[in-house]
Every structure is written in structure tokens, then in C-alpha cells.
Image 1 (cartoon, rainbow, N blue to C red):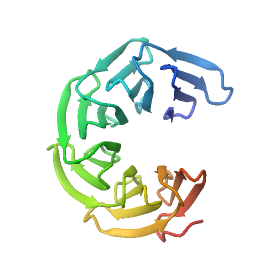
Image 2: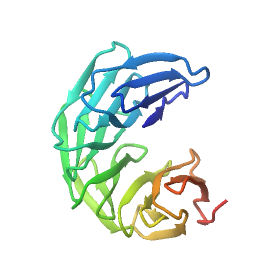
Image 3: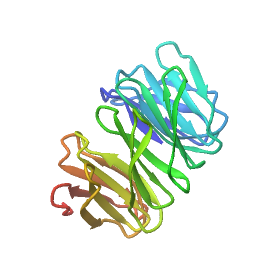
Image 4: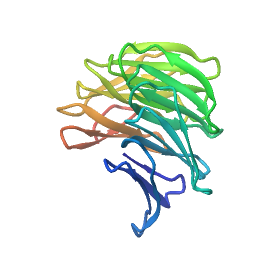
Length: 238
């Protein structure tokens, strides 16, 4: 797993050696080496101010690394692999797990809420731009949109044949993209859950996807070893 810092100066990577390495993005030189995990990390995200790195991993833990002090705290509660983590501008953390749940925490490690709605493992989570909503994708093929403040389910969408492996909001939260085992990228209107576009993008499952910062494009990576660039308005492959 890997993550860019918000200012694009640093790259964090996690590996099977249970270490997280932070490097200078231009030179590749090692800035920090974070150790102490009981198992390897599966997901990483920097806080918006760059002061924290959040990891989730095979040890069923969420770890908050303070990059200024070098200290870390481990958040316990999940009972299986933490597959995906994300963070808001106000430093609230979302964690998804193979235990079928999503948990919302504050940066100090206090559990704020537990979200249940998936019937199989949860593979991916992402907050919208202001942290009021969360989207998740699971092995049950669903895309679920959540109200973060009330910890309630807004809508559940039968999105893919097989697993929904990755989900993302666009920059203003009006669109949701999902990728699944069926090789499709689905683009949904977040206000009503209606399908805007369905694109056969890969010959195998879609592993990861992201919107461009301006929301005009979606880039996806698949298990077929291809990267695909999609126009998010028209659904056409560029």
C-alpha cells in the first residue's frame, strides 16, 4: 500500500516486512521508518495537515502515527483485517474491515460510531470533501452511502456482480465511482443513487480507482495489468 502526503513532498509505503517507509518524493531518500506493527499494513492515508499517518492492516488494528513526535497509538475494535482507511479535514478516521463493519474514530483513538450494513467484508471507504458522508464498497457487491454525523445508512446499491473492490467520491461529492470483480466502473449520482454511466473498463477485476482533482476524469487500475482513463461526464474511455 502507498500514500502521497497532501503537499506531494512525501510518499509512504507499507510492505510485507511490517514496516512503513516515508520517502522524499523527488529523491526517493528515506525520511522516516515506522516500525512496531504486528502484521503488514493494507491501507495508508496522510492527514490533511501532514502531521499524522493512518495505517490499517492484517493485525486488525488502526494505527495513528504522529509524524512530529514519532509516537503512535493503536486503535482496537475490529476483529479481522482492516482493509481501508480514510480521514477528514477535522481528523476523523474511517476504517473498513473484513469483519463486515466500518468504524469512525477521532484522532485520539476514541470510537465515535460503528456502521453496519454490509453482509460480507468491507473493502474500501472514502469520505466526501467535507466529511459529512462516507461511501463504502464490499464483498457483497454493494456500494453504501452513509451519513457520518448520524451514523445512519443513506442508501445501499447493488453495484457489481461479485465484489465491489474500490469506491471514490469526486471533489464536490456529487458523483461516486465504484469498481468491481465484473471489470466495470460504475458512476453513480450521490444525491439519488441513480446510475449515470457503466463502463466495461477491465477484463479482470478493478483493483483501485480515483477521480482527478477537478473531477473530470477517473483513473482505474485492474488485475489485467492495465490503467484506464475515463471521462467522468460521458463515461468514455480516453
